[in-house]
Amino acid sequence: MQSNNMDYLTIALPKGKLFGLSAELLAKIGYTAEGLSDKSRKLVITNEEKKIKFIVSKTADVPTYVEYGAADIGVIGKDVLLESGKDVYELLDLGFGRCHLMMAVPKAEKRAKLTDYNHTRVATKFPHIAEQFFNRHGMQMEYIKLNGSIELGPIVGLSESIVDIVETGTTLKENDLEEIVSIQEATARLIANRVSFKMKFDRIHTMVSDLRKILESEAAK
Ligand SMILES: Nc1ncnc2c1ncn2[C@@H]1O[C@H](COP(=O)(O)OP(=O)(O)OP(=O)(O)O)[C@@H](O)[C@H]1O
Ligand SMILES: O=P(O)(O)OC[C@H]1O[C@H](OP(=O)(O)OP(=O)(O)O)[C@H](O)[C@@H]1O
Image 1 (cartoon, protein in one colour):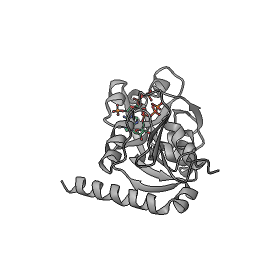
Image 2 (cartoon, protein in one colour):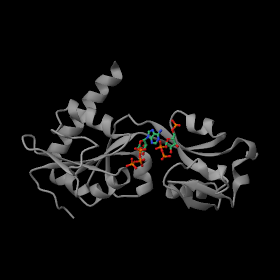
Image 3 (cartoon, rainbow, N blue to C red):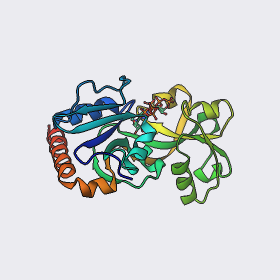
Image 4 (cartoon, helix red, strand yellow):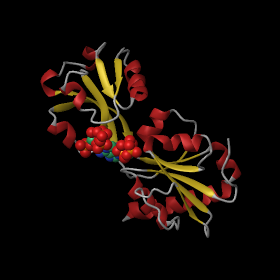
């Protein structure tokens, strides 16, 4: 489905942790709009001069807007992108929002090896990624989907382990949990709708090369 106007490039930005850095990076290539903010109640923010529309959505919904063509372009964490299973083009690794997905358990209940957790319960926001990981290790687990404060799972006896994001490690430390195995590195990615990529190729190609130049010059500093 391709519901947005051919004259505009529609960009889906996630609320939350990635919003600020996404907006900051896009501003460096001139992609801005007056009133663009993750706090705004306005759902579509337009820059008429540059023919850009921004939509600010719940993080997990960005791949959906892009897959259906309601947005041509999106910014999303690799973790959420993989979990969504959405069929979109991944155009660029934006480098920020670095974190990794891992399995952790309470320190006091650590077992000798990974497969010793076979047939136990995992609390996670990422059941698909977790299942693919454990399947690769020949393990059958029970997946308990949580929407936040995942670390609470094993503390209150809901699960034996968690699969969750670690950035600084503070949350694990403060809750006496220990990482057992790293599953997936993640950074923010620029994604595109497959049809938009063909129909608006010149615009998207220019946008990607402008962003690449900025990222390369920042990396060289
Ligand atoms: N410490 C961190 N915790 C969570 N996500 C992180 C962290 N560091 C980097 N990220 C990246 O930021 C992305 C967005 O995280 P955020 O916490 O804003 O998502 P969310 O809570 O699912 O979104 P929303 O605020 O819309 O509910 C993650 O998908 C991940 O790629
Ligand atoms: O390694 P750290 O720097 O401590 O970061 C990791 C924590 O941050 C995320 O939670 P978030 O803040 O998104 O809140 P949530 O638990 O409500 O998802 C993630 O789920 C971990 O709990």
